[in-house]
Length: 138
Image 1 (cartoon, rainbow, N blue to C red):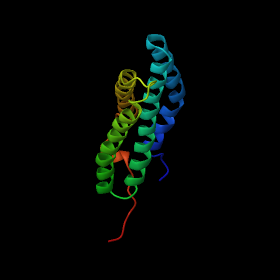
Image 2: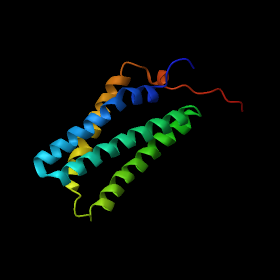
Image 3: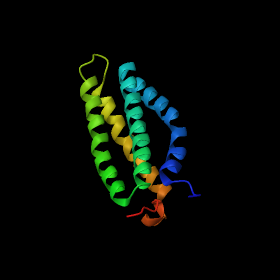
């Protein structure tokens, strides 16, 4: 396939914004509630970014196999990524420096902004045009 896969295209468009988003989250958290909140907010952005990378790599891999595999990875991957967010929250919550409020108040809007950006980047394309499936022999 000569065209770049939509997953890799999305990663290429989003990854340059990750470090600035981390810095902004840390700065806002620090200004509003101190360094602990800033660190927690930065971890929130990092988790959202890691989820994006995991999702893009997994769906890109699955799209090369079959539509059924793509569907399974997309739905199962979403569940796994949400479990990771909750697990990070539960693991870090007992620590003295972690702010679950700053973490949550960063993860939710960052995810919404990322989803909106993803919709904008991928809009205007027919669903069938988004993925390439290799021919398989039965």
